[in-house]
Length: 319
Figure 1 (spheres, rainbow, N blue to C red):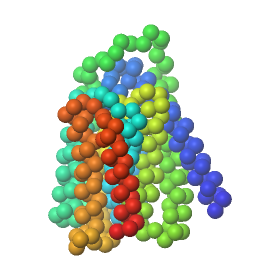
Figure 2: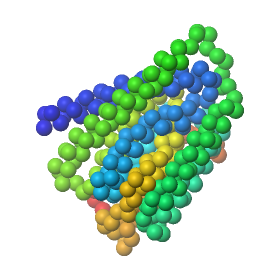
Figure 3: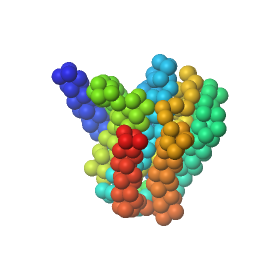
């Protein structure tokens, strides 16, 4: 047990330092090419911070634990939205670049509708479904690259000379690697503790594993807030949510198709269909709509999302 605790703390340290390197590299990249931070956050940063979800879900599906891959995807979207983005809104509400958010928000909505349609109809995430989701991921990359080419410069170039590009890219890669390794250590050792308490696998995936694999987003968000880059944090969350649906689930379903988990019912309906998917849709709407319609985040919005997240976690263990 002492060894498990030490590895857990090592993972935490790697996450914190990796988040620091990653945010510095991402903001330097945005300044160098004079791109909106929210756009960098929703593409480069979100791809890097979604690596733990890709690894955990793919490994789970290949080892025959599709319910872990499915629960990790939904749980991560809920955690990213109702905990990580909610903290940003509650701590530092204010204007948000809704125009730069339109592309990831639109594709996230399309992916969520497709994801929900499969869950509520066939209940089977087949290889064809996985390939379709990966197709949406490619569309997102292509459109994002085009948007970056035409994005207006947000501010004048800094007076001091920028750091060499190789150093910026090295910081991004080193940060992503430290984040991924740290998250892996936390999830692996934390799950051992949870299993020792007899917690069901589906509940572990929706809560503990989802929180663990979302720690890169959380660390990035906290680091970005501390450095005054809240737009980077919001873009990271929206982009990561999209990638959870199209890249994480798409990769897992393509390599090892899996069915909808059958871990119980709620009001006579599959537990996930009655609780998890509706909560995912609700918190996503609460986060995205004010940004798109009003161009800002509100403190009340963040507090509401945090309350929903707390209730959701409690419900997982009580219902």
